[in-house]
Length: 491
Ligand code: NAD
Image (cartoon, rainbow, N blue to C red; front, side, top):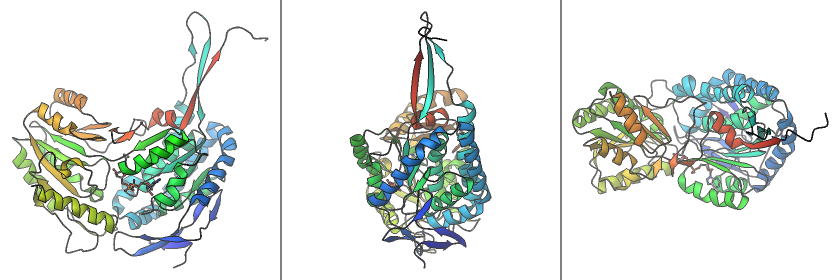
């Protein structure tokens, strides 16, 4: 296998960095292993502080001209990026699926079109909606003009579970606002970031505006977070890594935006549409449960518990587990051997703590490899590790609640606060319960729906800040207030 290029499902992917509009090699490479069959699919260049320095320097050099472009011109280039993504949806889907084991059908129909939207929507927003009407200071006649100045170089660090989606959700608004970028993709799924660099180049994004440094968290991520040349740090990943990165950001005095883990609840009330509740529950095994927003803790009113549990088990049993390149597959493999072992450990300890498996609980012996069966646990004590820690795999628990107060208390009894979902037939209850839930996003009788203009982020340990619509521009710009006096003018 050549060391600077890989053919993945027939798609050529350059495995070098993309810095200052050029491919740049490192002295060493690391193996990129596909979770589908644990084979090495690429050797990816392993960046270190030298490549990070070069990328930040390229982004700094490109910043003045990109920031000075009229917003309409920047938006036009970003719309061409969106078109480039749309033209390559199949390539991007094939590569992402092979790289991280996520379902090809999700990419073709939902994820990759949304990746294009991450550019188109924020280009439109920046061009047509960003701004604030001038304010008049009462009595004194001063005019205050609020403007959104690009912040500079934005460092973006992303996880492996939805790498291109999560990167572009940051890259789109950051570029639209006039910033330049250095992105460090996840070492477990690094390839689509390289294809994005090709698309950016073809769309006419100037050299240095968008840079990719491949590598591990420690060798490439850490120097990027500590680099004095960055102006914003956008991180999506786990809480432990976030803690480490926060120290670097504190030394550097760089504003950061964190999108972190979760342990989200699904609340099913006695007046719920049970078909809908079961459908939402079974959906939680999507991407083998490797979804930050997943409702891992199911809470059901005791009057419905038996029927709900039976139907969720039946629904999960019917899920087809296998190769994610097959459109019929519902549940695929876990990202890595290390992650597989971690999830096995969580389940073993849950059983030792008293949880009872109604489904799954271990590897899928028919498939071997990294395929872990959809697992449903009941009777776990409230303070057990399985109830409190993020598992990030195809494992859910079901608990009961007695009444609304008990439901909200149990739902909020977590250090996380990313999302919560409730199913109820009562509008009044929906208003009351959603107001009481400690979560950045609450879904009522639906799941995983969100407009790009709406705010997204986590409460408690699930994150810092909000992005989406104007909230993205709040983070990726320096908001300036220019106060104009009514006096002192010579014309
Ligand atoms: P992770 O924290 O291990 O890694 C995330 C990224 O950080 C990777 O690119 C990694 O290389 C980098 N990194 C690791 N150590 C670093 C360091 N010391 N300095 C700088 N960078 C470093 O997380 P993961 O296992 O890749 O992803 C899973 C986690 O991400 C879960 O907790 C999940 O809930 C969370 N997540 C959150 C959201 C959200 O929107 N809130 C979305 C997806 C995933």
